[in-house]
Amino acid sequence: MDSDSDFYGDDNEVANLESRAEDFDVGSYWRLREQAGMAYPGIKQEPSSPSSTPNMTPTTTKLHNPYEGQVSAKQLGETVDEFLRRLRPATTDRTPEIPWIYIANPFIPRENLGGEEAPAESGTQLHTLIEGGGERLELLGDFQRTSQEKTRGGRPGAAMTREASKERDECVSDILMLAKAMKVRTGKWMLFVEPVFVDDVWATVARATFKNELGIAAKVAPREERGSAKERLICIYTYDFSDRDDIARVLHRLRQLELVRDRAPGKPIYYKSDAYTYLGIGYGNPWGLRASLYNSSNIFLYLKEKKSGNTPKKEIKKEDDEDWAF
Image 1 (cartoon, rainbow, N blue to C red):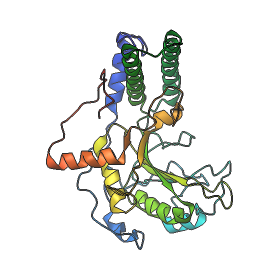
Image 2 (tube, one colour):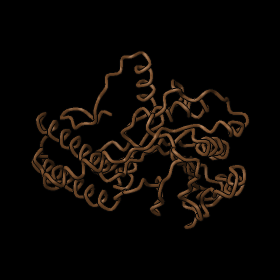
Image 3 (spheres, rainbow, N blue to C red):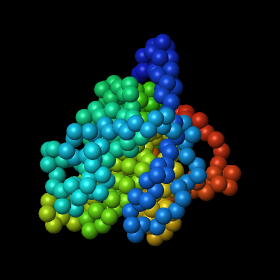
């Protein structure tokens, strides 16, 4: 894609988008010491990671719930125990009213836009992301179809392969920059849990979310049909897919809660931006894009390198021959 592309509009519009992306300033997550005794029994307790995001501290003790009045979510008027009894994921059936089971971090103000992903920050322009991101994916698809026609009947050359890789990288860069400008910055760690363990794992995640130890919200898939052995998805949402320190903090806490392992034989878990979900960029997508931004293995490596002082600081930028670096 030409670097002078007018995908975002003229210079004034680009400047406006960039200034919007700088506006949102939230404090770092803080822990509720007075509720420290609410931890799930039987789960090993350790101190949370000392490294938290310094600009996410709530400035008020007022409780928030973007899901208030929604039957599928925890309400401010019920305890976590009451919520867990009312909506057990092992036995709660999926219905139009309960597509997911939700819980919000009550100390981070957010808005409910009516979708199934994370509650939104103020000023989110989801429609613009979907429209602009969809157009950008169409451009990538057009390029890929043209390239396929040129190489039909023969193997693509090295130059064509490099160009195709560059186009994919630039498409990802454009979409993520647009997502930040439109304040669709949330993302999630994804846990796939066997049905027999889903109640216990969800209880641990829900309690930690409500106590402000994880992210801004969490959700779990209800039962699709009785007797199904299909793994259930649990999503733990963070506020910004580009804040690698905060994403690492949440993963570190998941490891402390013994929900994730940082070495074999545990399988890695994956982190995906909500922007990708809204745009239909999933596993096996037609553009050949990776569906996730990170996995637990490379984030644990990042934490190890950071602890040893070997991690270079990188700003978010588009690069010709590499994936996005945050």
